[in-house]
Image 1 (spheres, rainbow, N blue to C red):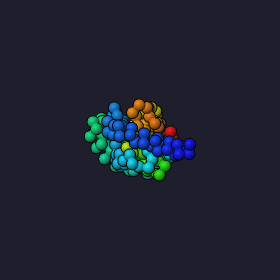
Image 2: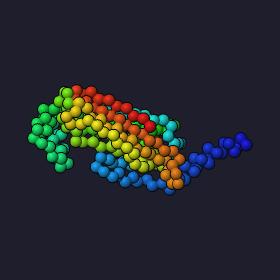
Image 3: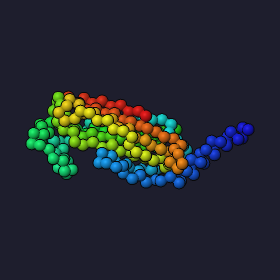
Image 4: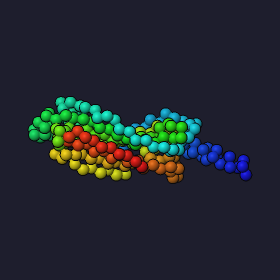
Length: 203
């Protein structure tokens, strides 16, 4: 009986490896201009563990972008702004804010990360421009895949004192018949016209 118990984890791991070999390793970009998916699976099925053990949140410091570069980016993306908004942008400071929720295995290797990024301008009290937003997934471990975005909540924006985005997605370990593990990370970020910001993540 003891020998059988010792063999069960080995059999289970061998099953995970077998299904990982059958899983699709290339993720197609998610539909819509607001999302993209990146596959960076550099590990192999021989890794000590492919299962999710811990999660970790991260947010990057606010990265400044000049008003001129922000306007140039609008033009490159065929975004038309009024003369009034252009004047407001030039009188504002513009920023890039990025945050994520990530999953790791038992030995601390990244399995996946779920990101969102907000590019915006503010004048010290209000948001003067909020045209750029993107959410995306990155997968680092063979066997895991990003299935889709599940939800998106947005409020505030240009003319408001704040701009908020909350997104949620789903990752699957070996989607052969059904997922061995499934994770539903969410990221919630708000930027304010006075320069403040808030971040939370879970799932």
